[in-house]
Image (cartoon, rainbow, N blue to C red):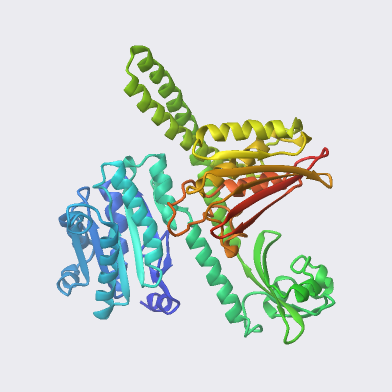
Length: 548
């Protein structure tokens, strides 16, 4: 009980699971199970800890483990379980009374009911609420897609509330795609391997950003108390001399005062430039086996630059685990998807030969969707290769305008509603990876079409100057708000604009494009105005060079 009181005081809750340990409110995780015992063992311990720590508990059961079986398992583990049931601290009921109460699954209704249950528990004096649900009832793709969207929305909804959410999935009903959906939508997953439970950790984009925002907020808050701050803090004058380091920084790097601004923790910081621009910056530095996120600010009142650091090694480790998982899953998907495409093409030809045009056309549509899936898989493979430094380049001299003509023709063929207008300078021979540069142009063109549905023209322009070839793609679509223009070249970032359809894809194309151009020693940028369209451009050297 002393441990529970201590963790509660720190904002943590006892999960009841030894492998998981204590959790903060707002944790959304999952379990993959294969037997009733696996499911029961985890959930009984999970809810037992909640009951013992004054939490309101809600268990939504499935046909795999019914509400009566769940109650029997709880009674066996907790001698006085009847007391908790009687006072209404725990509710156990089947999925039909929750997910399908209206006869069908309605995401907004279910999310609203969770919030209502939480508020009910708080009003009755409980510290918070822990819940568990099981989508064993799902038997078709539409319900799965709806439930996956619901899981993603849970991450947005539970933030302000004192909630712990454990979702359980029957492993035998999950293919590779479903597993990716589940892991992406949860902070981590429990899975049994060789008789022992293991954790597969994954932080979705929104959770990662929120975690970083909390870190930055903590840095700013603690900066008022630098001497007591457990995170490293330094101060520099306008000449770049270190004028202050707090005890935490000195303990980490005893030689920092001797090395001054040449110490790796401070190397590269330009106080005069920061004063001139009056802009704060954030960077990540790798020092030995640790990673630090530095928030760097010019403080005009005292004429100094302050550096606030926080150790993000664990975040980096989680990010690497997620990238590794994506890499393995994507590699495993590639071969069967390619085989599906080949079989579809063969079967389509058989139907054509038999005169069954309707069936052949349906297979043609299927092939189109398979091609889209292959494109997504290629993007994920490129991401893992970029992260591991294994993205391959085959550089040679090639006719730049010829590459532009072929790429534009290919995109024009699949986008007949848009007119591709070319304004090209004289043909120039460029040294680089023709296929990769074409990949960048394809991304520019498909984005231009995607985000200008109400316009019908896209311009492609080239010119050569100062030993560089510059290519630009202009659309006349929705445009990009200024505050979002620096974010669009980051991983998984997508522009969502009111009144336009939700963009498809993973938000990886521009990130991959920027990495390709960077490794050709080039630059990539965007100029845009909301409501008037965008111009995406890149430049690469004309002469011979090597990809970094």
